[in-house]
Structures are given as C-alpha cells and as structure tokens.
View 1 (cartoon, rainbow, N blue to C red):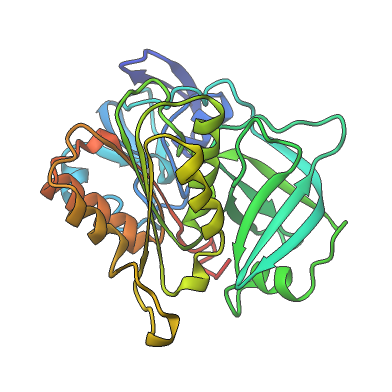
View 2: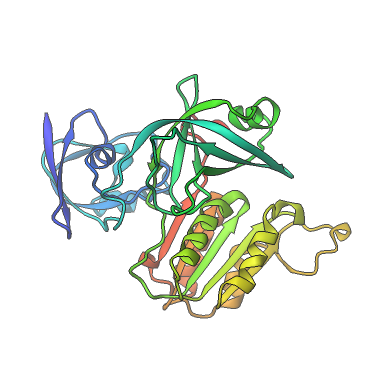
Length: 342
C-alpha cells in the first residue's frame, strides 16, 4: 500500500510505501526534510504528525523521541512508516530539495595523516560532479555492505576533490584500515550528499560555530563557503579538543582571523597537561560559549561533533542563553548504524 504524505507549511507532497521509512520516502523524492544520523539516535528528523496513522519502529534512542514527544503526536521519521495518508508539520531544509543523491566511485588521490586524523582527498570520475551543500556528509560504502558516514570538509566551490577527516579509532573497522592499510589510488564507492546540516544563507544573524574533534570538518566547509560567498555576518568559532595536537588544523583556523573581517577563533582544551604549555581556554567547549554570551537570542549556533557536546550545547544554550530552538543546527557524530566504531 502506498500512502500520500503532505508536509506543512510548504504544502509539498510525496508518496511513501508501507515497507520504507517516511524519511527514506521523502529523500527518494527530493523532499528536503531535516535529518542527521538516519538511525534513530540524533532526533533531527523528529516532527509533528498533524493527522493520519503511522508505525513508530523500535530501535531509536529515548532521548531522540521521548514518551512526552510521542504523547504530543511527534514521530521520528527515520524510524517511522506510514499506515495511511499523513499530514506532517516540519521545517523543510531550503537548498537541498533539488540536489540528487548519487552512488559514485572515487579514487583516493591523497592521504595526509596529522596526529591521529587522516585527511583524505577523493577524486571523482572525470565526467562526474558531486553537487552538495557545505556541511553535508557522504556514506563510504564498505565491501561488507556496511556504510561509514563522514562529513565533507571542503566547500562546494572547491570541488576538485571530496575532502574527509577520519579520526583513528583503535578497533574501528574503517579507521584502522585508513591508518594501517589504505593506499593512494585505491578505488572506493560512496553515496551522497546526505544530511540537512548546512548554512542558512537567507539569515543575517551572527553565527557561533561549536566543534569538537573532527566536528571541525563540516564547519570548515561551511566557513570556507561563507568566505567564498562574501558573507559579512560576524562568525565565532569555538573548537574543543583534549590536547593541542588534537587541533589538527589549528593554523588554518588561525589564518581566518586575518582573512575574514569579524571572525573570531577560540580553541578550548579539556585535558591539557603542564608539558603542553597551553595558555588558552580550558574546560568544555560549550561552557566557553556560556561564559562568553549572556544572550544568544539574536544568534544562530552550528554545533558538530560528539553527541554529549551537541546535546549539552542545545540544552544549555536554549534554556540558559535564550537561543531560539530553530536557530540551533547540529550534526552529532554517533556510532555507525551497526553500533560499531567508524
């Protein structure tokens, strides 16, 4: 059975099969629904069901969809199937509707290892081009049928290569391969672009970026896109890491201080040792934002990295610093769909 789904306030409609999730059906037809992890962990695709029946499948986080959410008629679209015609209320993501999701081959053109992060440059076939929005991600398709998600670290205008930042997770299937076995000129396959984390270009609000670890990757792409587009909105980047070496592209971030009017960069370390000689900010990166801003009601915040950081930032900035809920954009790096390390 095929159901018809209408999205308010846009009025866009799409069809959904009984055996596919509502999110998969929307993406298949180019509807720009908000989403992130696609496995029930992040809650980015949570939306209000105005009318109609649906099945909420098991396998999602209770933080992504609470009992109170369900009582109020909310559904997690990546873990929900239509059981008849539906009307949903959701803020569609402008800009992503007309971008096709492709499965493409690519060649590993360059591997640069900095501390425990490998920067991969992937080359597409000559006749292919990946259209994407700065901040989106791709799924690397493994030979065993599993997928590993990585943010695109370059901006759309700089698309000679697709740049990925892969942190080494000992025991991680893909990251162990990248650090121990992968050679340049290898051929891989990926699917993308995916995700609804990208710059809201129709806004004029000043921006606060929050990154932890390799959460810097998509924010790098967004900032480079903003620079290329001549964006004049004030931007402040907070980049959190454990120790100085974990700020693996610190010099690049510092170069933006001179190149971009109104740009500020605040690195924050949580576990600096005396031998590091660190003279900068310490503690949790989201706490640094709380310390620096008493009122974020006129700002937008883009947060990317560990789920704990993203969840804490959302909770404390919206409740304690007056940040509107619809001005917080995030991409949390959860475990892979099969629960293993990346």
